[in-house]
Every structure is written in C-alpha cells, then in structure tokens.
Picture 1 (spheres, rainbow, N blue to C red):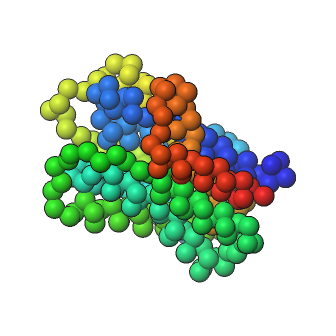
Picture 2 (picture 1 turned 135 degrees about the vertical axis):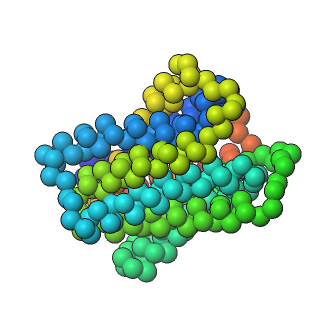
Length: 286
C-alpha cells in the first residue's frame, strides 16, 4: 500500500467517511438540523485547508484558471449537498439515495472519455461489482411519506450529475494544479454557501445548541473534512475510475460500526451489498 499512495489515501477517505456516516445522524436526531450541520462541516474544512497549505509552504495558486477550477469543484460538491437537503424535504429517501448513489457512473464515463483512463480486466470487474454494491448499500426501507410532485426527483438527478462531474473535475484539476490549492477552494466555496444553508433552516423549530448539537456535529464533521482532503490526494495519484467507486463504498464501514455499537443487523439487500463491496475492494486494490 505504501508503494501506492493513492490506495492509502483512498482507504483513509473510505474509513473516515464511513465513521462520519455512522454518527452523523446523532446531532440531527438530537434536534440539530442537517442544514446547520452543513454549516459546521464547512467551518471544519478551514483547519484542514490551513494544514494543507502549510504542507506546500503557503504557496497557494491564485491564477484565474486555478481559482475557476477549484471553485467549480467546490460548488459542485457543496452545492449538491444543499440541493440534496431540498430533495429530501419532498421526496422519499428510499428513492433519492439510490438515484444519487450511482454518481460514480458519471465520473467513470467522463474520465474514460476525456482523460482516457483505462484499466485491466480485473479492475473492470471490480468497478462493475462496486457499482452494484453501491446501489444495494444505499437501500432505504420504504416509509409512509408525503411525496409532493416530482421536483424532488429532478433535484436528485441534478445532484447525481453534480457529484459525478465534481469527482471528474477534481481529477482533471489535479493535472494542472496542486491538490492543496484545490482543497482550499473547496473550503472557500463551502464557507461561502453557509448563508444559503442558514436560509434553508427552519429557525421556528426548537434547535439543540448543547453539546449534542453544534459541538458534537463539529467532532463528527471533522472526519468528513479529512476524508475530503485525502480524496483530493487519492485523485492526484490514482485513476478516478478506480478511486471514486472505492470511496463510495464508505457505507461498509458505517454498517460495521452500527452493527458493533447499536446491534443493528442490516437488511438482506444491504448485507448483499456489503459482501459485494468486500469483493470489489479486493479486486480494485490490486
């Protein structure tokens, strides 16, 4: 793994995002809205960006092309998150998440077409299995929800494309600028969108401002931010068509943690996805 730094960074992202996924609902269930959770996440990106800039001795790239590419990557990711919140207001999670989860398909298509990324037969099989696993791992049990119109579906599809293009843009940007500069602009755009998240928050409802609110959210969101940083490094050294499907298997870690801490046994569909994910990781890691 040391000989393949991209693989190390990929595993770090997958593990950290898996841990983040296992605990992120705690603040929300305690009365701290997801939109405010976004704001906290954006702020936790700041120390990670500072650490990244320190690595390159504060030599941030600020030419027009770098600023444009970095901000595109940031707005696609952070903007997609805010649109997802809106989609979940009127749409059923059991449809929204499976639609969005397959965004690596877009990344794979764009990277193969424009970056001419190719791989061997073993990896191709691993990618195919990963996409199936991702879909199964995103399974949400059907609940009675008040579905309003079809705007939520349109928004879900938009997020699907935004996140798929973001990963491609991140890899593309790594070919012309430093990974640390890319992450800095990701942080900057995330912070700039905080006012939008605040406008989306219903402050008429009671909000938990105690430890289980913003403070616990900050601790948990740090895992998300570090994972985002290592993803940039993984895409700097590795192929997007392999890195993105692997990091999208983070729910495997979430399921394992939930099983250990909460004794929550996954649905058979998710369990099948878990098995396929393990097989996929084995194939892609070679």
